[in-house]
Length: 231
Image (cartoon, rainbow, N blue to C red; front, top):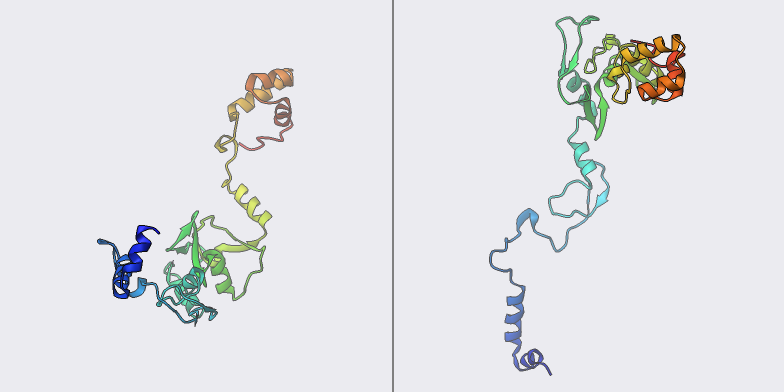
């Protein structure tokens, strides 16, 4: 029989209880958890304040079943959306104006205004079009800018289009990197002119490609105006 077991055999019940209490007591310097951060022995199920689903809270004061519901409850309610929305747009002195831009003053992403509604982010220029015309746009329909100003929410500067229309509009306005502005470009505009000149003088595709460090097919596309048609 070991020494510890032998010691327990000869100890009284009161001594055993004192030893157990000493082992369960917190170490010196250990913070004592109390109040909201204390782990409750038993917490009753309750409905979520937002979605009303029944859940078991981790802490006594927990009101929401998830972070999604907590964020959604703090977002802009639908009932006051229009008033809240237009109050955060910098409008000009004219009531209706097709000249001035009405810019969103709050959160932006890549230049475009954003607002969170019921826990979901929305583009402000799209929302401005829907609120102004009293419609809800279906998925796949884009809202484009005539003024080419991303934070603008002036309904008279907005028009509808598809993703293809959006790409063509951006390319026509020069918002896509092209030629020397593109990060993957290998030759400059001046070198393109040299390639065209050498090809007119009868230089072979192979020699031109080796000289400029590009493939023969690339030289052929430049000659056929399939590359660098602009600029």
